[in-house]
Length: 300
Image (cartoon, rainbow, N blue to C red):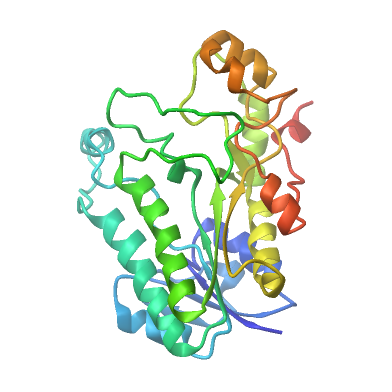
């Protein structure tokens, strides 16, 4: 039984990760906010990823880290900042994403090395490809479909960049110190309630979507991250895995969507049926994980 630190331990995804870990591992939470009732019985280190000393306290006596904590959007994105201002929401520091998602990973990884932690599994994002949060009017250049871990990135915004560079930052700690590091490059994360809502509200596709109808259930993602951690000794010392469902979030067959809205991609598309536009084949092959949940399960 390992002692596992879950950063962002008071967040929504952490609830599913903790549920997957309970009974098999000792779990410690790390967050600025108090844990909710379903995790109130667990040890909790109150702290901030942006404070190195807090990270040092959090990893003390820890074997593995499940790194979920992050700023989940580009805090300097012009459109997002304008929308927050229009809604009267508090202004977020423009550099919050870069500080937390890059320096926070650096602090956590350095603290982990000092404490003798064996492995770090980070919740990444398919935004590392650069297909979402586009700022310019330039479309994301798609070389082939479905996208996999070898597809070139073309990031523009701070969130996508932070997720991409954090992957390489972790890889550098693997090369330098032997820390085993892994990233689940996740699609949009959907709880069971959100999957049910999706099933009840899906409308026909009317335009190409830069997010390419990608999603993953919270339960499937939590299971993948735990499987990576538990199988780390049999995996490459560093690896990135696309974490996306087998199907898309669209009603229509995927190749039909390509034909209607991006016919230029037909020669490079290998999509069939309702295949997802991002491929989890590497995780299936190396980790033995296959997504089990689909929004289609909730359709009447």
